[in-house]
Length: 113
Image (cartoon, rainbow, N blue to C red):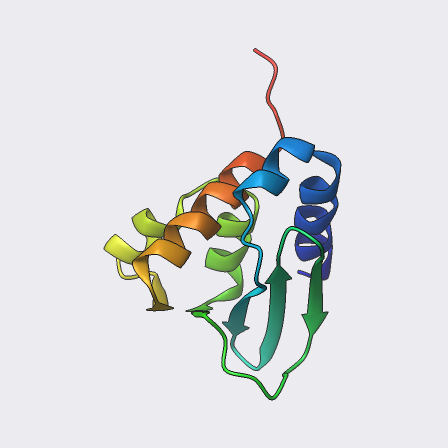
């Protein structure tokens, strides 16, 4: 799972067109999966992820199984589809969830036809 979070951060930093989508003030997104937790902090100046718990309430909180989280982070299924099917629990503003969904979608691997 750490590799997936690392890949997203690398893609954001390499794909400069994604930086303009990011907020000026840090956006904190917490991911919870069984007994593990990760936090992604996104802003125009700095993007990073932290494994483990931080003593801060996130702007967005996502709870899912390892399999569902894998599907989300690889861009195979969008966040709102998973939420609609009841596979994932999302707490936070709709605006932040749309931003996260867009960033993950734009960070996925390009497939050549």
